[in-house]
Image (tube, rainbow, N blue to C red; front, side, top):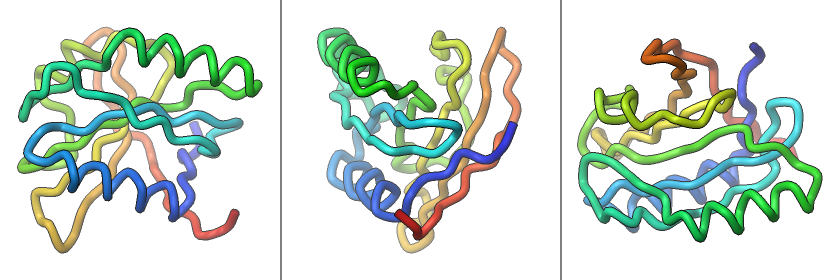
Length: 137
């Protein structure tokens, strides 16, 4: 699998959301084509939790509909870890129920050096997958 490419401005938007919502985990969906993210959809963490996220179902439905209408594909589900490393927690693995998407984690553990990492999670098996921040449009 080739690296998921996220434009710099989309990463900045994800990071701003993570910082604004901390200490609650921020979450959302990334959509695009052929591993290149074209759209970011910020979602509401309906559980308002500091150690896991749950997307509001009505928002998920609307986002999936918009993705299909635009002819895009869901590439990744992202969330933040306000105080822990960018690696899936046991709770993240347990709740990874969407097949064939990347799970992207933005860590604010070191505020001056935020980290972003991607993972495939299927049947409780976690494997890191490259995420590349690109500057082009």
